[in-house]
Amino acid sequence: MTMTAIIGGPLTFTWSAFAVFILLTAMTICLGHSVGMHRLLIHRSFSTPLWIEHFLVYLGTLVGMAGPFGMIYAHDIRDWAQRQRDCHDLYAHRRSFFTDAFWQMHCAVALNHPPRFVLDERERRDRFYRFLEATWMAQQIPLALALLALGGLPWVVWGIAVRVSVSLTGHWLVGHFAHRAGHQGWSVDDVAVQGYNLPHFGLVTFGESFHGNHHAFPESARLGIEPGQLDLGWHFIRVLSGLGLASAIKLPHMIVPRQGLKRVNAAEASGGSHPPYQAAGQAESRP
Image 1 (tube, helix red, strand yellow):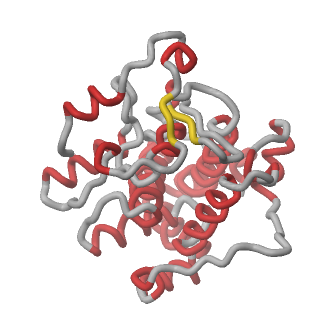
Image 2 (cartoon, helix red, strand yellow; image 1 turned 180 degrees about the vertical axis):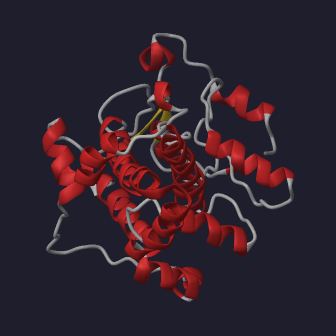
């Protein structure tokens, strides 16, 4: 996929193909991965009608990382590992840039005594999710055929190969840098890995770069919780809420603080300019 993108991308470039790449990336990463897979399926930070949930998770599957069950497992085992004092370097992103890239995108950890994860009954019994899990790689084929019919080979290369390659590489980049250094509004005691915010990348990551906030409030539907933190995924949830299609939306001030959570000193966080969350959170008591 990556070689097709590297070689075929420049050879098949057209502005219409580039537009397809931008549109599909926004839909699959923002609506699919960030909102559907991450905030809804994994964390249940809000509720929505099942047909919308299925559509959003389907878009998330098109990102090309895994099926819905695979995404839940990958997220949960990483979260478990980062809470351990002897967290493996793969989950802590401690190694060098290129070593971490190879590990994250081409390797897996085989634990001698792995934790046991059990899917919730709701997901385990969902026939659509079982179908997606069994066919997640093949889900690119119907989309590729549609793109081929509408725009020819350039649309297929940019709408599938380039999009999937950029999405997976971008996902790793956020994970790499957001676990190493950056703005930190909160810290968690007695864990091996802290999360950091990458404020300059809020737009292109649709809010996922505010990973320090996410470590602090994992169940929050809003990741950009500080003033000025652009979170397009959150704004989409607000649109759904305004249409009566999202409810039970969780925000930081509604969530029981996780054990060991503490506010980082303002001067340490961002040179003395860190705004207090409480003021912003209390000003917005509903989505």
